[in-house]
Amino acid sequence: MTDSSEEMERRTSFRLDMEKELVDIVWADEKGQEHKKKIACLDFARGGLRIDCDETLPVNTAVTVVFQSANASNQKLYGKVLRSIKQENGWFEIALVLDKGTE
Image (cartoon, rainbow, N blue to C red; front, side):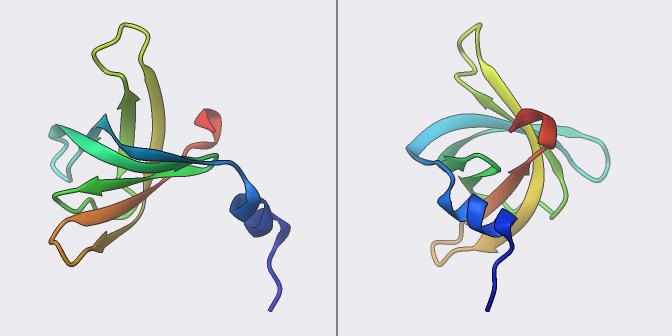
């Protein structure tokens, strides 16, 4: 089995364990209604994030992630849902891939 260089690079790239740091996520549903939720970020890597949420988000949903939202110098990242996997506890582990401009 062979891996592409991009897959190998992603696997060896820097990954930060966020220790369930709370972040805000913002997304619009299929009706265009905006939703905002404070959730736990599980880890952060060059190409995306893994978050823990009490509801699923459809694949390809555009999501804005806001770090330190109470701080005037907060950091916003933009991405989309890559996958959403229901866990045994009923919550969803959601993988977000970052837009190329925010990596």
